[in-house]
Amino acid sequence: MKRAYNYILSRGRIGVLGLALIVAGSSLALTRIVVARDTAAKITPVNLTVSETDLPRDGRFTTSFAPVIKKVTPSVVKVYVTTKSKTMSPQQMPFGGDNDFFRHFFGNQFNFDEQQGGRSLRTPPQHGLGSGVIIDKDGYIMTNNHVVEDADTIRVALNDGREFTGKVIGRDPKTDIAVLKIDAKNLPFITIADSDKIEVGDLCLAIGNPFGVGQTVTMGIVSATGRGGLGTDYEDYIQTDAAINPGNSGGALVDAEGRLIGINTAILSRSGGYQGIGFAVPINMARSVMTSLLTNGRVVRGYMGVLIQDVTPSLAKEFQLQDEKGALVGDVTPRSPADKAGFKSGDVILDFNKKPVTDSRHLKLQVAETTPGSTVPVKILRDGKPMMLDVTVKELPGEQVAKSENTEANPSDALDGVTVGDLDQGARHQFELPANAKGALVTNVNQDSPSYEAGLRPGDVIEEINRKPVHNADEAVKLSENIKDKTILLKIWSKGGSRYLVVDENKAG
Image (cartoon, rainbow, N blue to C red; front, side, top):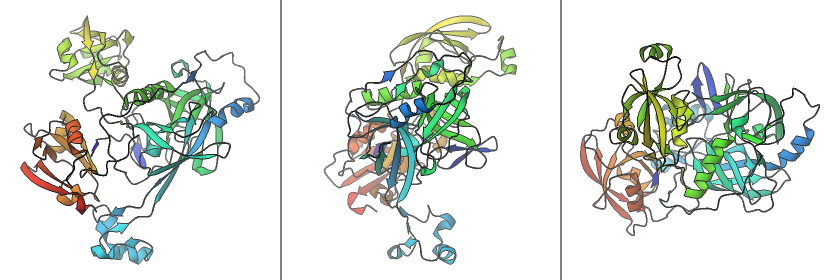
C-alpha cells in the first residue's frame, strides 16, 4: 500500500482558455504502484553552488552565447524512462473492450488475452523521454515529476556519451519536481541563481532534449513571473518565449550568465508544439522541495487552515479595500492554527510574516514555505479596520505524499497496489462520504492487485486491517507492511455501510 499522490499535471492535454497545457516531456500512460515507506532514510543534503549576484542590466547585447553554452550544456542530461507491459481490463479499454472492433480496424496486432475470454488487452512496454540538470558533482539530478513518475526503469545519458541507471530519490507531484541519483563522481554541475531576482525582459536560454533529437539550446526572454492558473497545486511559474517542446521537461532554463533559474515544465499550445509560451518552475521553489525531500524523505509544508479567495474589484469595494490586493478568508477550519489564532470569515489577509500578500495563490505559497511550528505575524483587515494576529503554523495534514523512493516495494505486502489518503473535507465531498465514515480513504486500486480481485474500489474507506482499527492513511500503510500471512481481513465502509473483505495475495492479477 502507498500514500495517495495528488497528480498535478494530467497526462496529455489540459484545456486552458481554449488552448492546451502540455507537459514539455513525454508522459507515460501507465501508473506504477509502489510501496511508500512511512519512515524514509534521511539523505545528506547536496552541496549546491549558488550565485546570488545581480545580472548586469546595461542594455548591451552580446554577439554570441557560445561561451555560456559550453559551460552549461555538460550539466544538462537526457532522461529515458520505460514502463513494463500492463494488462488492461475492459473498463480501461476504449469502446468497453470490444475486441472485434479493434480487430476489424487494426488486425491482430494487439495481444488479447484469450484465456480471459478475449476481454483483456496486454499493452506493449511504454517509453518516454525528458531532460534533467546535474546539480551536484556526486550525481544528484533535478527533473520533473511527470518525467519519471511512471517509470519502471530510468536511464540517464550525459552530454559526453556516458550512460547510467537513474534512481528516484524523491518526487513531489504538487510542484512537479523530482530528484534522481546516478552512481558517478566529479560530474559537471550547474551554478544556481536566485530566481527571485530575475526580471521581465531578462535574456534566458532553454536547454534540453526536445523530441529526442539531442541536446538543443533556444533563446528568449523572461516573458512574465509569478504565473499560475495552470492546474497545479503550487504555482509560481516563470514564463518564457524560449522555444520549449516535448522532451524539454526537466531541462534547464538559465540566465545570460549560465546560472540555473528554472526547470522547464510545460507549454501552452493549440497545436501541441511550441507557440511562444513556455513555463518553468523557479529554481528557488525547486531547491526548497529538493532540500525537504533529501532531508525528510518527503516535502514538509506549512498549514494555516483557511479557505481563501482572490479579491475582485467588487469585493474590494464591499470590504473597504483600496485595491484588489490580499486574500479574502471565506471559511476557517475548526481547531486549525487559524482558528486558534482568531481568524474569522470575512477577514482580508494583507501581510503574512511581514511580506505583502498579493492574492490567494501567493498566500498559499507563503504559508507552504513556512516551517511548521513557526509563529508568524499576520496583518488583516476586519470590518475595515487593520489588525495583527499571530498564527503558529502547523504541518499540512495529509502531506505525506512525496516519499523518498530509496526502498524497494515490500513483496510481502498483500495490499500492494492500493493507494490511500486521509479523510479531509475535500475527500468527503468528492466521494460523498458521511461524517460517520472514519479510516483511510482508498483513492486508487491497481486492477492487477489482489485487493481489486477482492472487491476493493476507490471511494471505499478502510476501517480495520486484521481487526485493528485504522484512523488515517499512515496507520493503514504501517499495518499493511510486513504482514506474515498472505491474506488480510479488511473492514471497509462502502456504499452506505460497513462490510468485510479478504484480500488474498495468491490471487494477484
